[in-house]
Length: 174
Image (cartoon, rainbow, N blue to C red; front, side):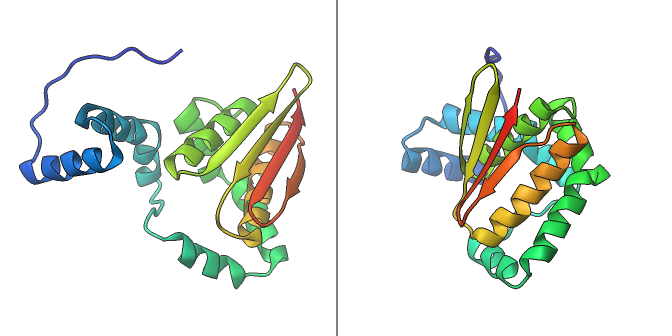
């Protein structure tokens, strides 16, 4: 269940408010909705990412170019290493309050939402299928599949992973 709302009053830099009003109008949102979205985004993810020095400044074309230059075997190795890394585990822990399989998938939901990446999650009492649909390339899929599989391995879950150019799917028993 979502948290309730509260009314607060803030002083805001006038130039920042003009940008927010303009962006809200462009998106067809109220200023209140946009400001709430920005605050939720900060509270759920950006404050943790900033503490770890994570960059959010590269456009997708640059990321595609970088990933194209690295062989698949190296991308898999980098993904596995980082999925088991203490920094990644601490990020999941800080953002979700734990390091279980469900926490890892909560982290993925948040990161997908933060980066406007589509995902689906279908589950029943036996298994769950979590699919990430991105607009990068197969090399990113290789990296992501290994990163998350490695993190899930630490949590005691061994998903069936399927990937292609723009999709990574994790299927695991509940």
